[in-house]
Image 1 (cartoon, rainbow, N blue to C red):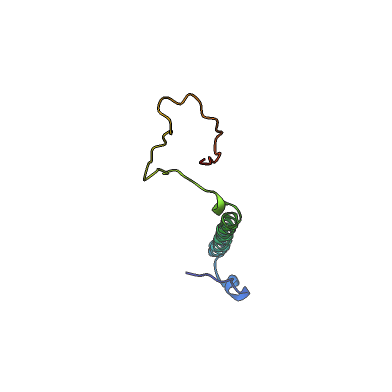
Image 2: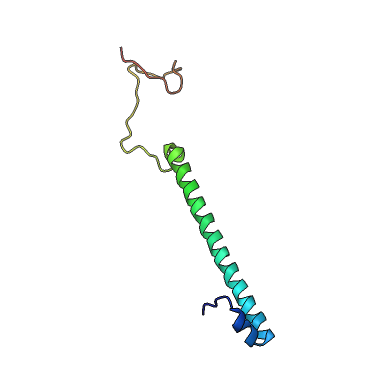
Length: 97
């Protein structure tokens, strides 16, 4: 039930207690509308901020939580015996002679 503001004629003819009840209901309706508006604005601003963050930086972050090698291959040396040292650094490409 939506209550509108009372006209002067209506307010004059009703009992004082009923006027207070109607005024309180009008205030509660106003507060409820403002609260819903505030919640809607905050939700939309969070959605816009999250979308902007995703499009600006988060979509470029790579993740390898479930990374695995499907076809493992063996790395062997061309000489018989044990290899005592490998003169390579991490992530260095090797050239075949």
